[in-house]
Length: 413
Image (cartoon, rainbow, N blue to C red; front, side, top):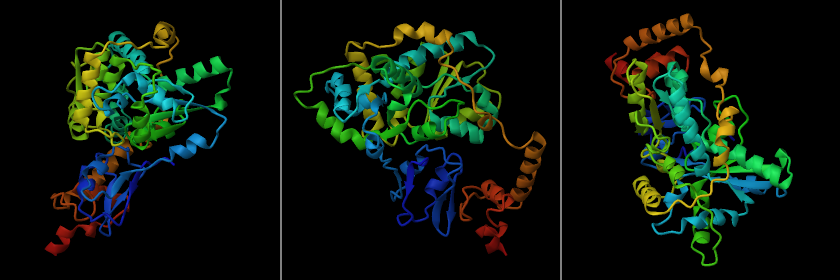
């Protein structure tokens, strides 16, 4: 199952809020009800956040079934960097990883440890490669899919450094194989996720690699059990996350962790679109790096989180500034070796990077769509079931709707 957003047709009242908010125009209104074009959906969760009738919900993603379908496998959990901001201030964060083990996992490899490595690789790549400006982060799957669908000319701006989830999965598998003499097929890796976009990153990655993570667990589905374990008196085994790596959960965190100065940290889909428009128009070439995160305030704003993103941001800032960093990162000393071997690098899938249409065909298609659009009223009212007149013109061109579906033109007749 590659889709992690559920839609309850009975709850939908056809208000068009989701259709107008969708950044890839993946939603249409058919017979007064919303319809999602799964091929265009980037799993950003905007529809979940904007719907006033709760017609959209994150799919439960039956992690328990995936967890127990192979009981003999060695199970590794990778907790998201947002996790530590979900607990009340004063919670002993050193207990969190041990609490995850009590849910049935055999080993925890913290995403913050992998973030330490990714930050160092990010800094080196930006310093050494001057041919592209600005580079754009590849840690947010929803932002990457947005670029793929709406800004294909910017695909070359993506800085191809593996994200912490992938780094953690690879290194955790390696550690389990060596320590317990296991085969890769005997290991199953789960990522505890703040958002639905991470599932798409696992089931359909943009890179030409096999994902190191097998399945995604929504953070909100295990939070209750996890919280109960964290506050138990007998939970005394401690393992610390990286306080610097934890900052990746908050907008601007990865740039600061990498020690960058000349960067833009933009969060929220509408804001990202404005910045990408600027880049596509040839601006911002004096900026080294754009950290684009689909959710407000960064990953702490993901729909699988439990706590308000502003409260979670405050909690993470408090943890990172008020506690001593007692993290023992198991692989930080290997950074030079990993970087020199090309461990952090990957290539984009060709099918993701290039359009199937030739430049001539794409221009001809665009001209025909524009011709149709010029005959429409240009009100972008949404009454035809498409978010804009241009989107309706494209639907007409693709034989997915009729020109006469425009209510305004029908009234004028």
